[in-house]
Image (tube, rainbow over all chains, first blue to last red; front, side):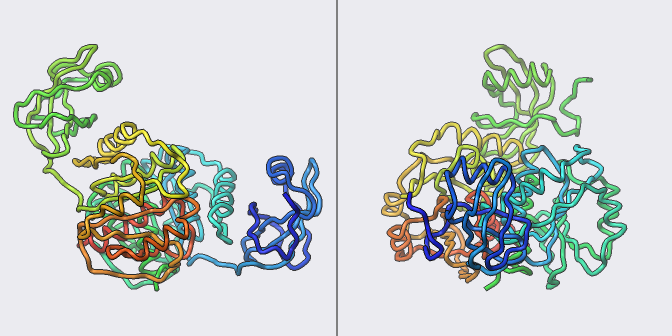
Length: 248
Length: 248
């Protein structure tokens, strides 16, 4: 395969997230796994084109400067897409089985959540969540979906404590299974958050507490019972359509 | 654990799909795997309660009559929920990696699709789809999500042939990545179908053909690129909200 020059308009085949801020001519380090992927899996070398984003400065066309066993260096050349941030929407969810938790994080990134908060409820099974692994999933989802923003994944925290310190100007949309079709619309824009319960739902005490909160809004996801990962995508769709960036 | 009598109001822990039509006092056969699950995994025996549905007659409370190595017999006692059918909405999708295809089928059942049609497009990788395996997935999704309806999964067919024989009164909602936010609303109800493209999208020829069809409607799924399984849930959400059974 011939080397590509910066003038090539073809889209680079590899798209990577880097922590260092991108700017014209800026050299940025890639991690050991990224260098391995570029050099050994994709068989790239000096001069080959890579798309980069840092989560703040849009997407850049870059080229490989050097790749080694412990890392490598790329040089940012030109910005190819502007930064595109999601609306100020958080997704709160109760972690479930590992594969489904990974899925929820992936879907939240694709659907444009700005922050992902795993919460522990009375019926949540998992006591521990590996935040770093979920954050890596969020990075990978952004790399693969073409996004330029990576939502932060927060540490697992207890729902009751989170609600006790809740910022009152942020509406919390509660995907309430008991509504079953009775839709409650509200013209309120961001900041907002969506709360998806665990399998088995919320306890009676949690339900009573949620219902009494001044910043809560109830959201119906139709007459069928949805798994948590399905519910997350459906709720994000409804919010993005009504209050987010899916409008005309 | 004490045996439950038909008068017990507690919800049975097991919920199974059976092919035989359910009616009061009707004896129905369960398959060998179902009998194994009931007897060996759940440790059930004669008199124990099971929830059954046949896809046409709602949900029934039943009790075990006998369980053996090659199958078993249950007796339907009383209908506990009416039949709940989805709107007349089909989901067409291009099969992708096995795990994601399974996911799309599961999500389509949860979200209330009436029929699931895998289609082969120019950029579809998989030439073969095991229809029976996908149909079993649809049954399992209905069992687990509490639904009483199981959508039929059709054999894989070529998109161009399907479109050539398309019933003209059925609008086809095409999730068109190029729309990027330009929403086209339409008050048309069922019958309808949703078309989700493969990763890599449709070819230029396919796009031109789709755009020219009289029954096509284009659907925007926002400014981000979605994976096929995410797109399926998002598109089903939009349709159910506007034209289906998610309304108030």
